[in-house]
Length: 123
Image 1 (tube, rainbow, N blue to C red):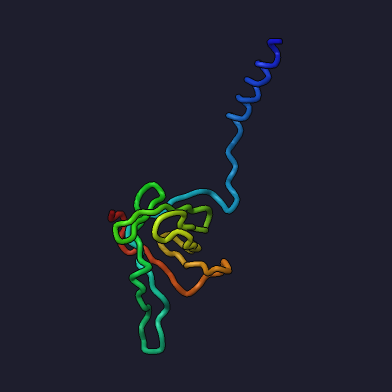
Image 2 (image 1 turned 120 degrees about the vertical axis):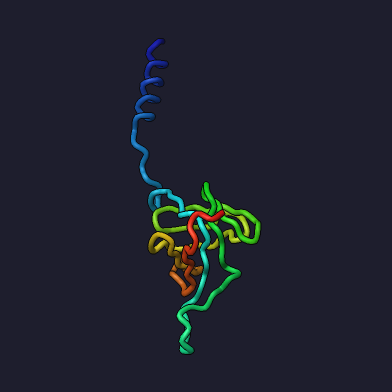
């Protein structure tokens, strides 16, 4: 009868020692904190970029962001960022480099809106 508790204990130890595998989509991460400004590519008039200030946001600590004083949360897995709560819930991005995001459309493909980290560490 002592055998069953021992097997359960041994199984629990084996599970605790097993390496944690990555989640589908890649490793979970966080963005650098700071202000991200959003813009679209310029046009024939010579503008390099056209600001879209209503899409700007500030990344805070602990996988959270803020827009106009309202907070939300995000999830970064691999190169994919999804706003999981708050004012921008449902927005998705592809992280192309540190501090550079391309918004994904409903079809999952990158659109023309990009958001760039402009001021690091500001809360």
